[in-house]
Length: 155
Image (tube, rainbow, N blue to C red; front, top):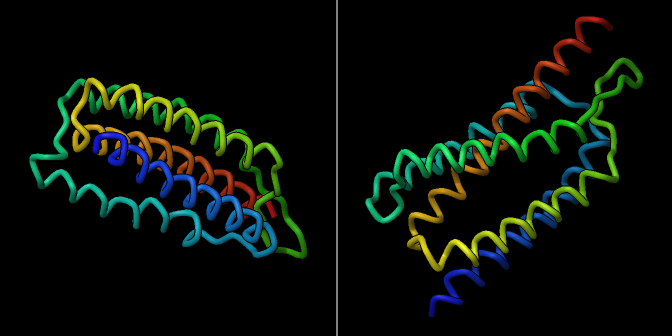
């Protein structure tokens, strides 16, 4: 039963990662906007509602650990997200490294989840991984927004 609690979310994470790679590839063909940059973290923030339920609550130290890991992982995403101006519009540059980084992060997530699930309850672990993901997407999108605004002002 415990393997299923780890296996099913891992399969879902793999499918979501594949979806993100395809979305990112398509995104390089469409102009970027402030809305497209800031909406993903806003939509993801609704996941914080899980912490209403005691099953998902985490300790202060677990919050700090997960947020710091997310911040470190965000550096990889920031490094692979660059913009360019084409035809007076701002586009996200396609990065071959992005797919490999995303797959690498997914592998790290699956391995960490299977190791940590032996020590930490599944609900708590889910909360920690949500914090990690949110701690990764927010800095990444903030930097993207700053880069976008800087590019728009200079052009």
